[in-house]
Each structure stands twice: as structure tokens, then as C-alpha cells.
View 1 (cartoon, one colour):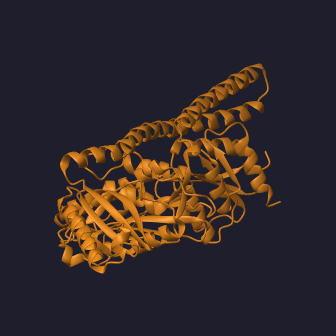
View 2 (cartoon, rainbow over the protein chains, first blue to last red; view 1 turned 60 degrees about the vertical axis):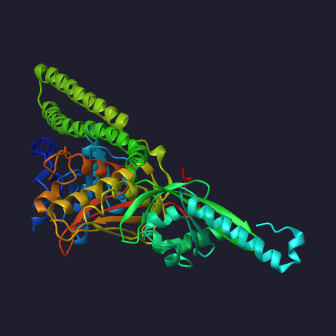
Length: 125
Length: 393
């Protein structure tokens, strides 16, 4: 199976959600890195230049939005897919302001995440 | 005071009539059982009933001609001249003829809840205001008034606590459902690459299992929508008034516990888009928390409530205390349900605050005060200037 260019970085504090995503995405031929929270991601000084972030909104410490704001302040421009328990209009508005490309609701309906990841990675050509 | 026409030509009779009128007024002010204060249009005290003298601890001679703002705590002390000016220019009634529970300040600096009704009196070219004050310190009266104020907030609290639990449950169940859906999706993809009859049957079964995980997710989503606070309740509200109403309720007992309260309200942070009761609930929660931590911990007890208008069409409201402060590991989890630093308590207060603030499109967070203590901050969206604030009740 041909590997799609780019690494998917998953930030989620729930271990089961994390490893299930890794399983589902690797089956699709994507390379995946896991982080158990914002601290772990921010501590990684070797983020790939090509890839995308899949970030859980509700996490202890920094929430998904604050994490993305922190990354943007560090000039990390990777496209972001935010996964939220509930994604109301307000959240989508604020997310758009932080330069978040996709906001998805849990549980992820069939294919929505893969579609978002593929189009996020497609921006690298 | 009407002076009969035949007296107008006789100065002596006029003086007698005026003296008689004044004596009548004086006798009314001395005997009226209510606290009553008359001020002129610039807020200067004209007269004070005996009950009012007793209530505020000032004698008539001490305050005659002084500005009425002397008898109120901040932020009204600084604002009262503007309230008067605004009324005289716009004619818009915020308290006159309506009556409200406000806070009065005695000569010794202590404050007390009071019910204030204001009447207006125009004579010739002069404009007077008469305030009738009912002291609510008296147990029975206070309790009934407070109950009135509290009942809507507590009713709301129970409702929100229920909603909060449902939403926590929804979140907790969603996590494993998400994992199940992901695993099944991966399995489906793998099975597509395997040939043979059993693989096809397996693929079909796995895809049906995935459908069921999504169905469970749908049920959760509907439950959450059912308990979600409707956005329709949001109205244009005056932020200073919201803060004032919430403070009246929350600051009961503040003097007894030696807590100094100050307000720093940004005049530019005026109108917000909010559900009044919900935001009051957030404020009452934050203020009571601040008071409790200071009563527990501290020698220095200073509570500050402030607002700032931000450039991005939001306002920030902050409640800061000089309590023991929060350990960083506690601060990180503070807004999650069932996290508490109190011996008693469910740990739902701040999580409800967060739910409410986020449903309003705002954010809530906590900072440490450089000089010790904590600052809770939350943001609200401002309302466009051309919209009218909701009518006072």
C-alpha cells in the first residue's frame, strides 16, 4: 500500500481513542504519531514539516483551541482538524479564527475524518 | 407648595406660609416611619427623615447639602452623578417608579441591603427626587427578598447541574464509542483486502457493528441537545447591571468577614449578549468562591470585580481574590466536573460556569495573582450598540 505523504499527529488524552485512531489511520496507509496531551506535543522539538494535526478539543490543561493558538504563536502552520464532543456555531467560529481547517463531532461518522485528513494533506501536493 | 394668590402681595404672609410649609415638611420627616431622603437634581441632600438619620448614622446637619453618593458604596458612589445626568438628559427610567434592591453604606463604612423606591417632584423650575428606603437587614424582610432573588438562581443551578451531569456522561460515553467506531473502520478496510466468502460475511457484520456504534452516538447527541441550554434566551443586557444584581446577592456577609470589595468597571464594557440568570449564576459562583477561599485562608481579604472591553467585540469580566491561590496541578483540572478543592461540595460549580460561558461563545480561565491569590476571568460577546438593553424588571 502506497504511503500518503505527511504524518498525522494525534493529540488526545484518552488512550483508547488514541490507539484506535492510530489503528484506523495506519490501515489507510498513513503514518501516525501519538501524543497524550498538549504538553507532550509542545515538548516535541522535532515536529514534521509536512503533515496534519488531529486535536481533541476537551483536554485537561490547555484545551484544543489554546494548544493550536500556542502552536501558531510558535509558527507551526500544520493544518489542524479539531475533534469536539459538541461543535456548535460558536466553537466553529472561534476555531476558524485560530486557523483550524476542520471541526468534527464525536463519534466520528463514517469517512469524515479520513476525508478531512486527505484534503488537509493534499495541500502539500 | 401652592401659595394662595392673596398672599403673594403680602411678604409677611408669604413668609408665614413658607414657614408653616417647612414646619409641616419637618414634622413629616421626623415622624415618617420610613427612611426618606430628598435630593435636588444635582444629587445634593435637601433633607433626611429621622429614620434615615438612624439608618445611615449621619445627622441631618452633617449631610445637608452634601452629595447623596456618600450613602452608597462603590461602584455607585462614582457613578451616581452620571446616573442622575443620564436620567435628566434621556428621561429613561431605570429605578424611578420601579424600585430595586441596592446596597447602602453607613457612616461607619458598613453596608446593608435595602429596597429603594424613588419618586420625582418638579416644582416651578426645580427638580427634586425623593428616595424611600426599606432596610432589608431585618431578618424577615431580608430573607424573603433574598429568597426571591435566590430562587431563580438556585432553580437554574439545579437545572444546570442536571444538564452538566448529562453532558459529562455524554462525553464519557462518547470516548469509548469513538474508539469502537475507529477500530471497526480499520477492520472493515483490512477485510476489504481479503478474498473469500468468510471475509465478506465478516465485513458485513463489522459494518453493522459500526452502524450500531454510530447509533449509540446519535442517542448521546440527542440527549445532549435536549439538555443544552437554548441560545434563544440570550438578550442584550447591561453588564454593569448584571454585575450589580449578582453582587447584591453574592456579597451578603462580606463586611462581617472583613472582606473589602472594590469594583473596576470599564465604561466601554456596557452591553453584552447574555442569558441574564445564567451569567448571574457564573458571577455568584465566582464571587462566593473568592469569599470562601479568603475566609479560610487569609489575613488580607480583598475582592475585586472588574471588566475590560476588548478590541475583538468581547468583554472580559474578572473576579480576583487575595486567598491562598491555586496549585498549578489543581488549576489545570479546575473546570472539569467533580473536581473540587472544598471539603464539602460536588465540584460542579466551576464546570457549570464553564459550560455556561462556552455556550455563550466565551472562554473562562484562571490566573494567579502576582501578589498572591487568584483571578478568575471569563469573556462574553458584546452586543451591537444600536440594540436596546432588556427592560429592567
